[in-house]
Image (cartoon, one colour):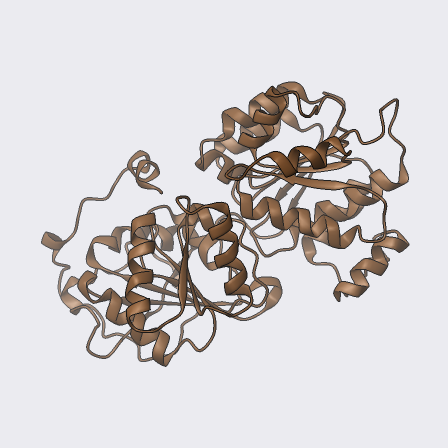
Amino acid sequence: MTTFKDLKVSAPILAALDTLGYKTPTPIQAQAIPEVLKGKDLLGCAQTGTGKTAAFAIPILQLLNNTKPQGQKRGTIRALILTPTRELAIQIDESFQEYGENLKLKHAVIFGGVNQFSQVNQIKAGVDILVATPGRLLDLMNQKVLSIHQIEIFVLDEADRMLDMGFIHDVKRVLQVIPQNRQTLFFSATMPKAIQSLADSILHNPVKVEVTPESTTAETIQQTLYYVEKANKNKALLQLLKNDVHDSVLVFTRTKHGADKLVKVLFKYEISSAAIHGNKSQNQRQRALEDFKNKKIKVLVATDIAARGIDIDLLKYVINYEIPNVPESYVHRIGRSGRAGAEGFAISLCDVEEIPYVQDIEKTIGIALPVMEMEGLTMSPGFVAKSSVSVKAGKGGKGKPAAPATGKPDNRHRKSKPTSKERRRRQV
């Protein structure tokens, strides 16, 4: 069995990893760390929960600790990690703190939505490693608070989400400023053509590390689908929370308004919950996340963009209160559970208008989602459309399998299938 010592990780970092209880590297860490330590560019295709933050943070710390800056002033930024969301930026910075506990390297994190005062002071005091979201980075660059002209290592994390959130032009502006002679590490959960093109343009003879095939779901996640009328979704969710889910659960909605509305429903039934989405302040989002991690609340209701980067150890349950209209979002959502080989459960509630989304998801992940019955709430079989593709059987959940659909689906209740452009426009 491979160990971190086998990967030539230095003693101070090994000691920190031991304190954290890290015993053996995950597949992406085992493949990426040696290549990054050799100074090579890296193209990593990996879902969340595979340990990719450590896969780049550990070798970056070791490389910077073992080499002195060439002709640079003390405190010059030597490594830049660009990531799309505030939550993910904070978690990456915390990882650098943990892994580099026994090193003298300084790190900082900058993001928008909060006053820049403390962030500016930290940068002025000198920083070796900077974790940043695109907007705040460009803002402070324009104010001449910081310079990235001398960085040695550049990490672009969650590149596909950068594209989804409209940050790709900001990324290109950053790329125009950083040195051409650098080491670049590029990570993305999926590799659509636009992302592959960007990777090709900025990487030099990269080593490719692909841990999980594109658009697949972890085998440790037990997936379940319930067909319910839209008007019965609240009842279905409450029944699941009462009878089947006895631990913390991450619930996904498609919109910010839907998230807030659902929290009000849960509050009415005395179920502790909080919402996390783009309209919440940074302090509100952090407090909700901390309360969820510390089990002060049972349910965290989130939209796709806000949830990207949420890293919660041993989260068992994810519920799709609304089916995502982009299949890759389903993969990212349920990937919050079943992390690092642990068992996970992904439960989806689908109304008749969302059936086309389920069909797209099944095509993408290559399995048919097992359908279960919920007493008194399951949608009439005549409304349920059979899967439009030939797929292998997936892992099921607890409960009684639903009766097979009889006759043709009642298409009067079904909206026309949206185009990919419409789906992107509808995303929140």
